[in-house]
Length: 401
Image (cartoon, rainbow, N blue to C red; front, top):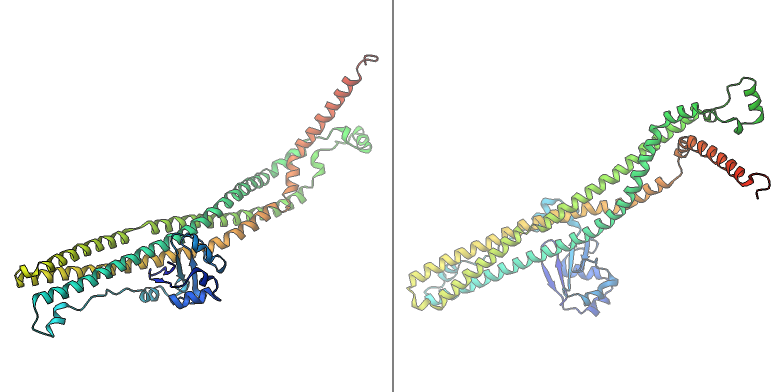
């Protein structure tokens, strides 16, 4: 059967509507509002397998074993927390005291009193079981929301790891280029250019006593330092942006861990189950006493009924306290998930912009060319020598080829 569950308090509404009828609704959100009271603009609904519910995937309920639609109320995310908890506060539903009700219509027989105690006990046990069921639905709603969060965090983490590898390598490269700039300028100023690479005019000047040329003569130190200043600014900006994204990812990861810990905290559920077991045991004792009430002294039977009834009422109050504690836990967790969803929306766009910035052309290319200048010059000389030696080897002695 298709049913709606209000995630924050675990209240379930069974629908007498077919899947076909749901698909044909003009407004699914308005229908959910009519059944749950959650305003259409505040509805945040999931299928039991964790997928968001939309008008175009309602039919997929047919393939799910659990045909429950979990409905979250987004107004609880921004409303005053104390007011939200007040609105969701759960009161114990205690039956009227048996003897107070019967005392108004004396005289009464012990069997009549026993029957009244049994009816009150049954109502209390059923109430406790319904409350425990609502706790389980709240738990399932949290698990679904947490799983959806984990799915998004994992996808973003994979993308971030790929970006981080690129960013860290590039930032390291930039830092090394900036750190070695002065040394590179000093080195090229000491490396003399072979006269074979110089123009005829320069060679003649050298023959006349000119000191010749160094690689540094082809680099403007002033302009290179201006380029370096621009690159330092670019580097610091990229580093700061990367650290912001890195911190956002760390915050998202920590938040995901916090949510999983909160969702995995089943102490309230376990307390509720223990409460339901005790209530069942008390119910069985009251039933047994009722079956043998005619064979027990009225005073003794009455005392036992009173003790069992008091104990069962305590369990009703206890399950209400457990319910309120768990509801508060649910609200805190759902709000935390909502906060993390903000990062989930913001981080991908920040990563895309950062990746584009790393790929964009910057002035670091000028510093990189300076850094490679000595190696390029050396490689050029080696290539020239290699070609000359190859030419000699190829020509060989006259007539040898």
